[in-house]
Image 1 (cartoon, rainbow, N blue to C red):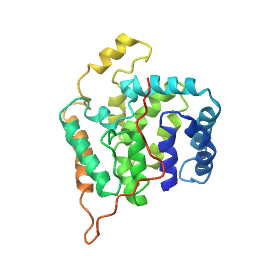
Image 2: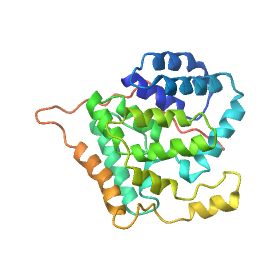
Image 3: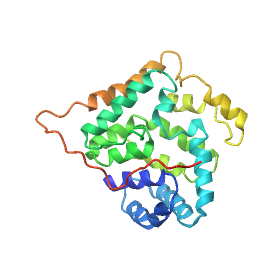
Image 4: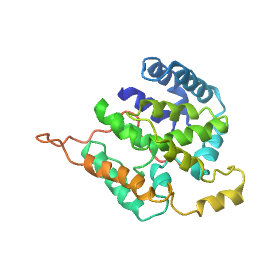
Length: 247
């Protein structure tokens, strides 16, 4: 189970030569993951093939256009939940503390809500706990999968796999609320500027606070160690993320 989270984490990282060289190992990991339906595994293999054989500069440009320039496809979880609200800072601190207490130390340059880093952490957790934490942003993953599908992007398979692995199904109203928000073309600079100026994400009257609080509360509760359990020594997973100097 840990290996599948590491594999999906790797597929969402900025394309580099090292990722292309690891394509075979990632593909092999997927072949041994029966929890992901065969149809989604085939789509994941298509993405792996694209990464392994594609022109690296084209792959990097595609990645930037999708995930760096499109707010609705941001790989930072709290962008979808808190936007630019004050709650985002506290949520970041809580999540970083959760990582540290679980044995994952990150550098000051890394943002804890980066999806590949979040998946790294899940890879270090017991299966039940990992699925429980994965269920918190499952509505985000489902919305991102749908947006990527409409763009005919093979990356949608990663988010469909994450939605399947979560311990609960996403609430339809929460997914619909996310999908109703602006989703501009990354080549439309004016629309992108307008989207980044929007207020924090809301999920309908009376629902916004509960959606944000559910995630924040879960993260705070997860910081409490189990009774009688000693603190774990920090241990970095095999797949690491060093911020890239990219366009």
